[in-house]
Length: 118
Image (cartoon, rainbow, N blue to C red; front, top):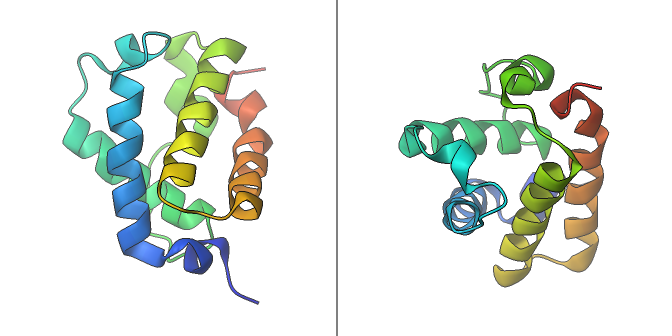
């Protein structure tokens, strides 16, 4: 059985998706402010490693767990939904199958409570 990572196109697809995703995120007034003072190159690299791992690819992610990484941000459902929406729109734009986008949404929702510190 192929992994989600393989189905969406592996490393080149994840790299492209993260780049397009962050273009959308920094243009989205609901969440853009959270990225104002970040090193976006480092953020994108961390996100690429995280998504590669989460999608079943090679694991090189060594960042904080989701709860610790987001604890100080005060995020709510609107913020979480904006991120998932932008990710889904990105994947759709890049031609990822609807079933695979659904799997990505399930993965995101599986860590929602950790990200929102519930």
